[in-house]
Image (cartoon, rainbow, N blue to C red; front, side):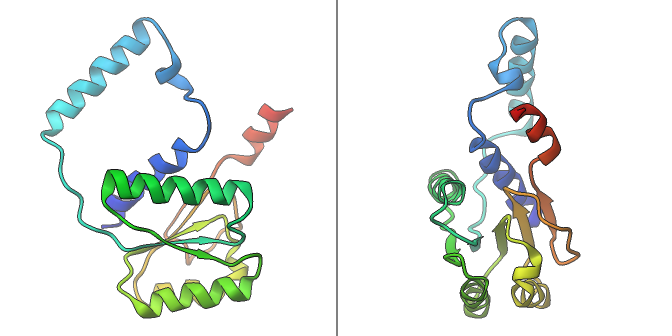
Length: 168
């Protein structure tokens, strides 16, 4: 179930990264070959499948900041439209205590299949992470680098060093 969820989330996170780069933005033989091979892979995989509904909580420390708001909007709109999922946003409004209260409430209310954390430092949400682990709810970090935690099931964050080099 975690794999079924992680692939669309990785795609959703990438969708928020601005203009398309790489093969999709190229012209010529490489782009043509990639397009052909992609279409062939889709044909080989068979008809589209309907993914099962997934109960998702999205944790943001401050949902009003531009990046959190953009991610919340994209995940909510795309997941509803493309996957039929309705993520439950949980906004700490700048307060770790408020985020913990919201997140543990969602876990307790259940059912919950996965928690997506938008770059929230694990030191700020220890009760949430421990409760999620106890209830076998995977927690995936996306959107921003945070200190590693054994309580995260996966971590998909940008390469901060590469981003800094690009900005310079």
